[in-house]
Length: 250
Image (cartoon, rainbow, N blue to C red; front, side):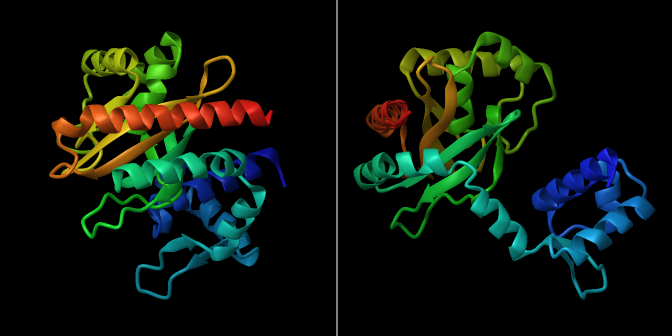
C-alpha cells in the first residue's frame, strides 16, 4: 500500500468517526478524493472490518465495533485517565455535576472520560467527541495554560460558532483567555451547548505546559454565577491534584 493510500485510509476513518453515518459523496467531498478512490478504500476497510455500510436506501457508512476495540487496546490517554479518575470522583462528589476529562488534538480537545451526575437533567458529550478550544471550558482552560504563540495560531484560523453564545471574535476570545489565566479556571456560559455552563482547569506537566483539562458541567439553571467561585476553585484544585499525581508517576 502506498503512502498516499495510507493517508487516504486514515482520512476516511477520521471523517467517518466525526460525521457517521455518512454517505460516499460526503466522504469524498470532506477528504478531497474522488468517489471512485474513496469507494475502493471503503471496500478495503469493510473487508478488514473497520467500517460497515447500512442496508438503508442512502447506504451510509459507519465505524464498526472492531475499530473502537483496536483504539481502546492502544490505550490512548489511558495513563492520564487512570491517574485522573480518583480526583475526578472527588470533584463529582463535591459538585454532583458531570465531570469531563479532555486531552488535546490539534485545535480541539477530545473527551476521554466522563463521570455523570445523578441528576436527570445533565450535560452530555459522548466519549471521543472533539470540542473546539475556543468553545468550551476544557478548551479555554487549555488555551489559558498555553504559550501565546499557540493561542495566536488557534485564533488566526476560523473560529466555529458552535452555539448562539460561542465567542468567535479573536479579541473576545483573547479576553476570555486572559481572564482564565487571572482567575485560574475557565468559565464557559453556553458557548458549547445552549443551556449548559461549564468551568474548567488545565492539567500541566513538570514544565507547566498543558497536557489536558478537566471540567464540571451542568444546566445553567443549576450552575449559576453564585456557584462559579466555589466550583471553579474545586475544578482548579482537582486539576492541580491530577498534575501533581501525573508528575509523581514519571
